[in-house]
Length: 181
Image (cartoon, rainbow, N blue to C red; front, side):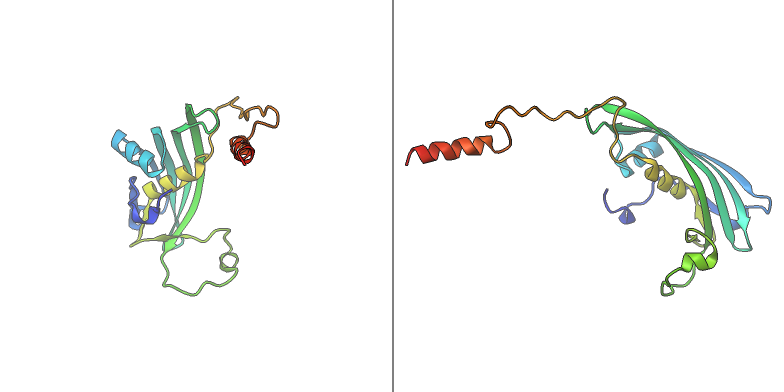
């Protein structure tokens, strides 16, 4: 995939921490055709007929957010065996914590264990979590990089005798040049 840091993520759905009540907030995201086309190009897919996300956003402490839910999509890809178009259903669970971006500090070994969390929290940027970018990230994580249609089996070409193989033509050339000497 191309360098994603230079390309803007085409699905944006910012949620400010101030807009999340103490009881939490339920967010359902759907995509329109232009957004799906941009996401398909961003993720290098043949097509993206459907993409949506459902999130429950809750406050975590005074200045953080906890986002749970799932991303669902139908992705159009090309089978790596038959080279035929195919569609795959993706359902990716999401469970992410956002905290304010801390000032840069040297990384210490075991920092995640010190906080008691398996993964380091994602940064809140100006008090905002972008749920569209989060959904895009989990969509891409769910894409099979080597999609295979059910029942597709790779069968290498049959090798027939010593004259077959990748260097058979070279061997013939070598044999004909030696006979001329």
